[in-house]
Length: 220
Ligand code: AP5
Ligand code: MG
Image (cartoon, rainbow, N blue to C red):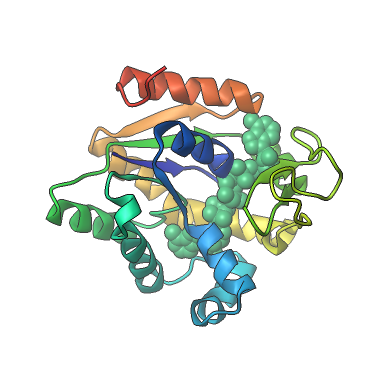
């Protein structure tokens, strides 16, 4: 079972996709998290992608596709995966379809989380992230129990550099120029599910569960 989470920056992909991955006991693969970990660890991959991620531009397809296909070929992804932030271009989507097709597998559903620009600016402006376990917080809607510390692992939370207003603007432009075409791509394949991302985390989560339950993906 392979489910993709699609949506503008700050739509809530990470927040919702991690929950679905836990429910379905599937590996959670978030390209943004993998890149940030590589940058933080100063690995060779990190050095190659740093300038793109920090500027809010897409990392070149060949680097991203190789990283994801390698990750998907690991034994823990044999039953499927929840993909957050990948694919993000038609080329990436085609490479993914081709790689899965070779193993007689396919993407099952694509969840598109829809939020207004006003809402995503509020969400990104108040986001805090754990650098160690990647748990997401928001200073208003989901603050940590102890300010600045991760509830799960105690690490000190940080704000992403690419959440600076100018970079957010570029990330949005990039989304509409290069990623939004995937909506059509997956709609044509009959896999797209649009979910209203407005409201509290639990409300959005309920809508996603309902949408997936109709497709009999999530046992309630
Ligand atoms: P990535 O990390 O994927 O960033 P993004 O797509 O811009 O999305 P975000 O992570 O900012 O938002 P989200 O939708 O996950 O929202 P979240 O759940 O955190 O990518 C970063 C960069 O990596 C890219 O710019 C690019 O450089 C590179 N990259 C990644 N993938 C790539 C690819 N495939 N190809 C090439 N380059 C790639 O929620 C946001 C905030 O809102 C949080 O604080 C959360 O607590 C809060 N929140 C969530 N839901 C709600 C709610 N319902 N109500 C109130 N608050 C909420
Ligand atoms: Mg995210």
